[in-house]
Image (cartoon, rainbow, N blue to C red; front, side, top):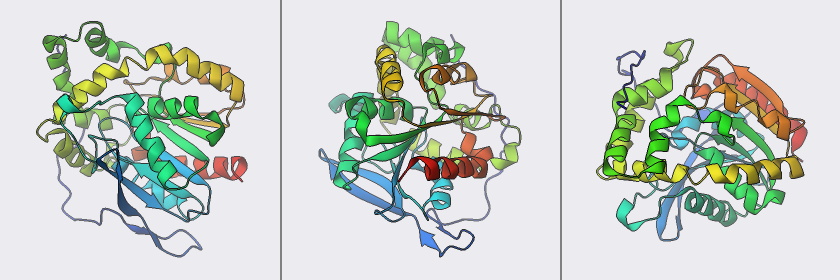
Length: 317
């Protein structure tokens, strides 16, 4: 199967530069900054964005493919006045180290362990967690290990049900079934600039709300020597998450963590068919389908931030 992507994005490059980690001012609040910090975990330098008072409840933001903590650049300042916000870059993503794929275990289990060690190093005992795309299996693996630490889920286009793996996943499933060079090479189309633009713009109502800096940031990282091999390893390992779905669903039913579901309903990667089953397992989940695509924060960032703030005010101490 040949993969092709047609983007509706504009080709204009931003003429003005801006600070990567802005100072933000909310109504009635003093300005504060978002820091890019690093720490050493298992011999790797792991980067993470951090803002807010560590004495406040912690909100952990887990990014998706093919981005990094950059996807939360606007959300973090909107919440950091009341919450301690941490957004890591996984190994091989963002500003974290990218060891050679031949010498490192690029897996969701290992990524979950790295993120757990990060929050442990920060003295975080419990946390709410934003789960998007790859962030969902990372966060759900952490939940499975220590459900008592999770005070709430914010689920945005992050899957935990077979219903959510539809046509988009067919070539990836073929790679799971037969991890051949040919099947892996077929997935390299997902790593092109056209594919990156498509991921950010497909299903979006107003493309002008999607900043082109997303494309250049992501593509620079994907185009680093060796990164395609990293991404192929992660595509392959995603298949290990699917057998975990029943376990995670059972834990949802047992522990009933508070949940806010905000989902771009036009997403072709994780369509709305994967959002609805959460309601059967998380009985009190708040459920919002948004008229946008995969990266819902780009078009509905302020609305999502408002929903998160209201949700956390009711579910955290």
